[in-house]
Length: 462
Ligand code: ADP
Image 1 (spheres, rainbow, N blue to C red):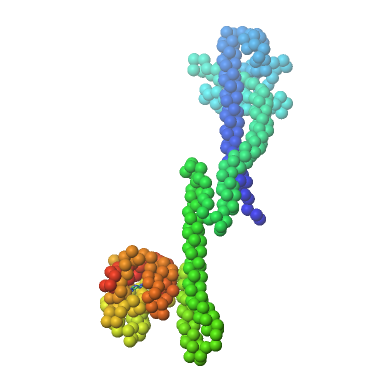
Image 2: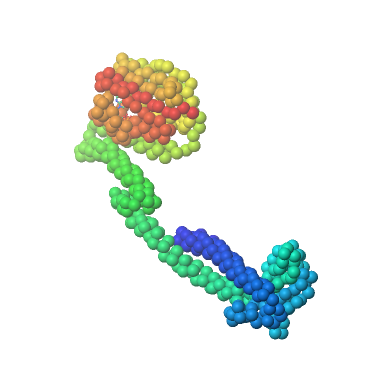
């Protein structure tokens, strides 16, 4: 089943809570009304009993008493009946014509015997419900008689059922009004959310610079706008980065392709000697090799960036650094550069072994590439302050501090003219930085031009 909309759910909750409150209030108010009406009837019965007793004490007796009492009570209390009984429960006098018989329950008789009065409710099948008070009369500590007074409960019952009918009619009306009001209120409360989603829908990849407006209330809606704006800023930066990257990549591809085209065109312009063709082909081959290297670097870069979100294994760094040492030694053969191990110990991190190997190899590759004959390249691996530290140090040409941050950007080569054969596309260090960042680490450079460089990768220990 389709889940209910937020608006419908909020309205339903609102109505549900209101219904529960109304139900509790109705039950409480009905019970209170019933109790207080009965209290009133009981109080009036007690008053009538008192009058009956006092009038009787004046010794009027029989129907004289009734007339005197009727006069005292007035026409408003003409539906009150009373009777006198002797202590054994035998009738002495009954009011009304014909006389109305009021029953004496065993409980009321027991209570009277103990000198206590009793209130009872009787369901009289003919005259409707009746409230009955039984009071013992004591004279000098002796029970001389029992007085009973009754009052009909019909009006009380009518008042109560009228109140119940009103409640049953009003509660649904209140709930219906609350549902309508709730729908309007939630609609209004959710309007900023609807407006924001409409505004967010209008932002496309082409205008990621746009931001959602804040209302300044510092409420949930403003926080949502902040969250979306932060996300948009991230997307904008990522898009700009991707655009720059593809523009740079296209530029990198165009340079060797233009050179290739130029050479082939010149060669085709006239008939050439076989040596001449061989020279052109040879130089074209160099451009093609450069293009292949560039394509491989690009492929490597996008693959590594894409694969970095993969699950983490425990990776021993020692074999990786030793392998990089071996590869570096091989690359340095015949260049007059010595590659050696400094301090290397067993260190374990969490990550992806292939990517970490690539990062260390790139640093060693660069160190060998940018160190002239007679120079030295050193590798170390230690665990310090909860971090794995891999350092690749060389006594090469060094890097100017102003360029230190820039060289980690893609396609940055400090001196493009400097041995393009040996140099890559400028993606090596960008890849190192991406790999290390994906492992929660950092890569730093300390360098002095002419004196050499030291690249340090720091990774959290496993
Ligand atoms: P490349 O593929 O050109 O080596 P990198 O991203 O690996 O690209 O390096 C970017 C630039 O940083 C290099 O072109 C070079 O100018 C500079 N560089 C990198 N490593 C060193 C180093 N060890 N010594 C001096 N310069 C370096």
